[in-house]
Image (cartoon, rainbow, N blue to C red):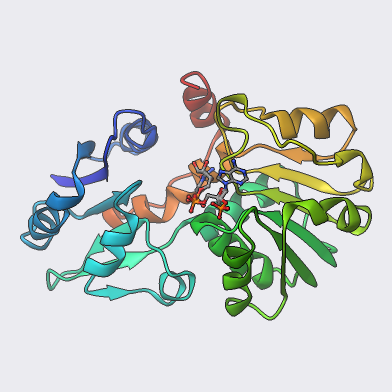
Length: 273
Ligand code: NAP
């Protein structure tokens, strides 16, 4: 039986076992996908279990992403470029390749939820400059974004993203009001919004009516930022779809079937939020 996992510390909160469990059942695959609590000091031993053939691979979450990135035997070009890996795949020779699926998750979510979102991406505002922002900047570049303003609380971290793409212009959150009137897409990649937290001063009303707003935070499903976008009549997309779409490539690599992100799956996970 093919086995896969999600590892983190803690890991109880993860929805990944539900997502992959749903697909295993839907496609009648005799596999398993389990959540395993792995402390950072036990990560190397877990890699040993993968190399030995116990698992086909799995997902990696906080706080193990950086350690896993270092322990991989190889990285696919995207993970290498982003500088982070959240998906591990065991190759037939027992070596482990690291992939980054946030890129596909972000694009898959917007493509499905807001078709045409990338028709004109002359100016984009990305709030935050962490690991997820890195994948999103590269995804936006792939979709021919003109200028990508990365605004972050800590300016130096935003500046680090200029090395990823010549389209990136780094700044701080207080520049939002000046940039908002010409933005075509706004993406929140900070942790603000989790559990209802909100930005102190973000004049969303300055965004033009055609600007799509998306938040990658999905707890709660409608963050204060998305609620404000909706009240202003702006097209908006929540972050749950990104979580579902980022799971697709891993499942396909481990179990050999490309799964679909359906309304049924979304409703299943939504019911747990
Ligand atoms: P990360 O690497 O830790 O980055 C966190 C970002 O949030 C940094 O830019 C940080 O700014 C900013 N931030 C934190 N607290 C802040 C505050 N009080 N005010 C302003 N900015 C603040 O995290 P990540 O991996 O990029 O993930 C970011 C969020 O996206 C998390 O909530 C995560 O759960 C979510 N996520 C969702 C998906 C999905 O599938 N939907 C995928 C990946 C991540 P500084 O640099 O100044 O610290």
